Image 1 (spheres, rainbow, N blue to C red):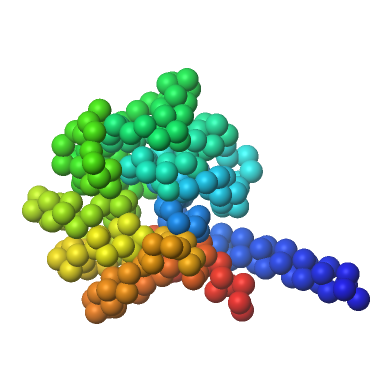
Image 2 (image 1 turned 135 degrees about the vertical axis):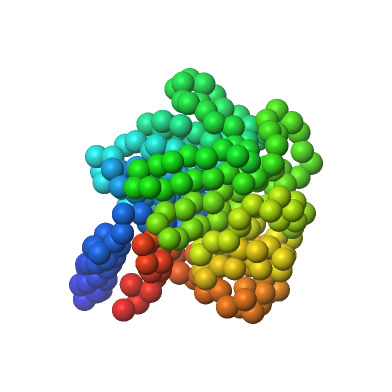
Length: 288
């Protein structure tokens, strides 16, 4: 009897996985943005036409490899662009295995000075594989298939080779535009950097905000949220993390601005179709 129950549960899990795969791949627009549930870290896939992909950060471990296997065709072993917002372990660690297993054509990185093992290994792999490099700083703009545009808004100046006490303050901030909609990816940029970004008078308005620093109270100021005016706010955060993220004040702030808040610790992977901003999550589908 016990074996039968286990078999039924296993079969149900497989069917749920198949159903999720069908749903996320049906009736989708050309571009979709997938916020991976990688625990206490960031990893985001922009998946577009012509098998064009951008991977932003790699999370704190190799979970990103499993996620890529779920969302990319088995025959697609190429990632066109990898972006590292900053070299903290919870953003860079998974990228090492990505570079080991996938053909990465280009990597964008601020190249700020950092000595943690994962970042040192990443830099070695970039050299060994002769991967094209772009230094991320304000003014960089990439046009990609399907009329997509990726603009780097921060850092304001070239910070490559420089040492910073707070690596978060060097976080690469990028705005992705496709069709009528836009996404703002903020890394772990603290409030001081947000103020500097506002002062540049660049357009920060975006339909979807990747909330900075996992919902920490040290990021996401009221002025920053007002400048962005996001309809959807995504928080990538680990379940029951010991940092207390996301902070209650940040959740209240986003709620006051009328943003729909979606969290990976509650929803699992979060998929947003770029054409209609429809939000899909694995956990909500599994519960039906």
